[in-house]
Length: 81
Picture 1 (tube, rainbow, N blue to C red):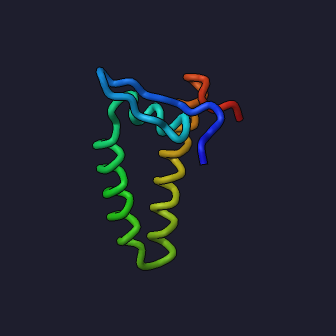
Picture 2: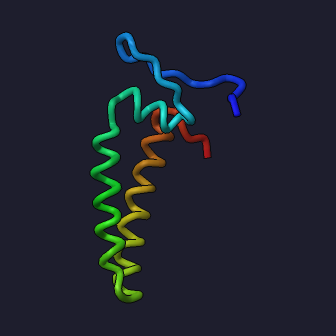
């Protein structure tokens, strides 16, 4: 399904469609390799969960990271709430 007002990222001669504002930022600033590394780190952390205590440690870590991302989003006007 085509979106009404699609987002596009222009890199030299290449034009890529972005599915969301986050996708646009990732493509615009060439953060795909960083996202791959973060995904692998999170998968490694989640594999370490064997009990509830470890789950809480990883949950608190991920909550801190998400809070920092929300603060960054607010700073740049990407997040309103």
